[in-house]
Length: 274
Image (cartoon, one colour):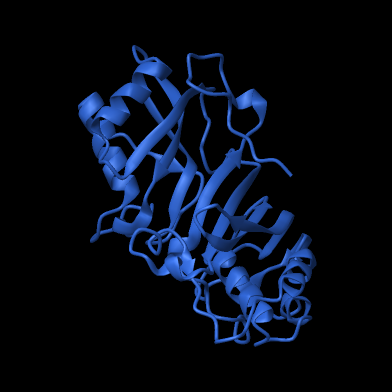
């Protein structure tokens, strides 16, 4: 007998080649599964709510896995955190109903993208975790144009113009529920922007290509109406290059409440609002 669990995983993606196990290169999945193997003495497969690229971070990645029936959620969290490398941390573990799958059971996902605009964004203590955007002298980002561009993508659209080439997809449609920019500011002089986006699904490189295009609009490199034009395209030939990976964070996945069992987890079940 076994139990199914969901871990909410944080990781610094800077030293990983992404989530998914690969023939070469360190991956989050491989490190997580190595720990599960140490706990059980056998291979355990872990499934994530999303497949992040190299350099992309997470502050609430849903990861599903099974453990022998003797394991409780709280004990699983303690054991994972004792054995995972120091660039990973499990916020909470919840027991789930049999058959739960972190990716297939998700109803939605949320990401954020951080941009630094002040000179200190180039500090080695910040540039691994945000896009240190170097603007042309005297050119400010047109926040209104970027907000209008974000508003244009809300709703259900075909996003193949904002996806990496070479994908095999049944369809390219995604339903965006939230797409908004907010100011990042602090007493220490930090200046920047943060983009929040939530949808039922995302395509490969989609968030980074959306951000790259909106930044070009904000810098006046593209017309303000380009976002709407690109949504009618059937390829990404005219889309701006993707924003750098280090500014992107997987924030949360949303699951139906019926997926959760009453357990001794450390936090309320995860959700994605908006």
